[in-house]
Amino acid sequence: MNFSSKLLENAVNEFGNLPGIGKKTALRLVLHLLKESKEDVDTFASSIITLKNNIKYCKTCHNISDFDICEICNSFKRDHSLICVVEDTRDVMAIENTNQYNGLYHVLNGLISPMDGVGPADLMIDSLVERIKNQEVKEIIFALSATMEGDTTIFYLHKKLKDFNLKISTLARGIAFGGEIEYADEITLGRSITTRVPYENTLNK
Image (cartoon, rainbow, N blue to C red; front, top):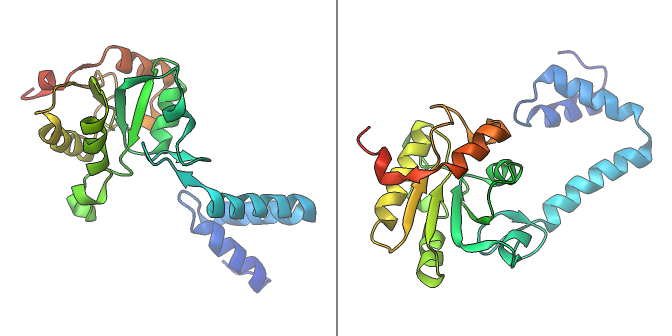
């Protein structure tokens, strides 16, 4: 791609580094910003800088938050005996959109994937164990993507948690194998949560 301006090329290259953004899309976005007023572009840039500088991660569940403890963990209306384990913030948002879940969350910030060099120590697993030790948790729901990495992570977590006195369940397989939580439609995801099954029932099947 030939550019008439080095400044334009640099901006396109930066947008092109974003996931899912090719060079043509990056160029279209940059040209759109050039047509906007300076005030609008300043607001856009400022929001990104403010996000990066001021965003927090909940000290309890590791979800993205404006506060040290997120609003979900702080809510007295939520069931604090129920923890839904998810891969990342996108999955929290997807489940919240179903309006079928009223417990808390625990964000692992990834899945076990040896091929990508991601092991259990790279995830927020130890803090999940500590929550279970120190809180009155009655049930853990594994809401991880129906992929090889998701199943591997669930299997590992089950071994870590099976000796605790709590119910361990997983989403009903309304989510097709290979499907990711964030892309599931709200009705299917909501039904998978409400009809969750004991994890032991899914073994050796």
